[in-house]
View 1 (cartoon, helix red, strand yellow):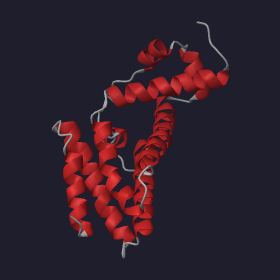
View 2 (view 1 turned 180 degrees about the vertical axis):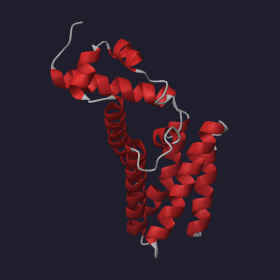
View 3 (view 1 turned 90 degrees about the horizontal axis):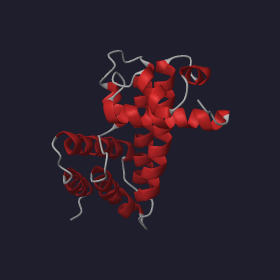
View 4 (view 1 turned 120 degrees about the horizontal axis):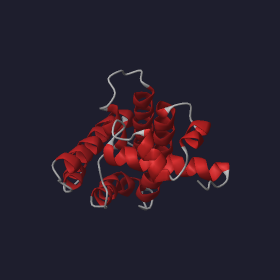
Length: 188
């Protein structure tokens, strides 16, 4: 196998692992499939990651960084604090309608682990905390009286909309979640 420089090889492995895990889950993403899809040797994978668990955690951390950067970047395009809060849901709806949407990678992979101390669950918890912190910041910008409380409610709306979009194929769940947010904000 022809392998490129080490940084590129590691990136390829992480990209492929992230895509395969998001598409089919952790259990269905075996090392043989990773080797074949990434076009690298098994030895190369183990050069960068001690085991499959370490690779999964690294791939999920990478997804967290990319997803949060994409999501906040899209939401932040709205011109005012209120518009940014409301923009959470049109951005989600666009994601729901995109090719390859398979729900929240962090909820999905958490469902494959039973132990709350499992590193995969810890990455999922970190992701949800980052999302909560981001939404809390939006609530603070809007001057919400109890920003942490509203942010927790909005996180429930976000995860609920994602789940309905995946399980029910209901992309309008984002619109409905936005309507609930408008009710919470007492706007029409």
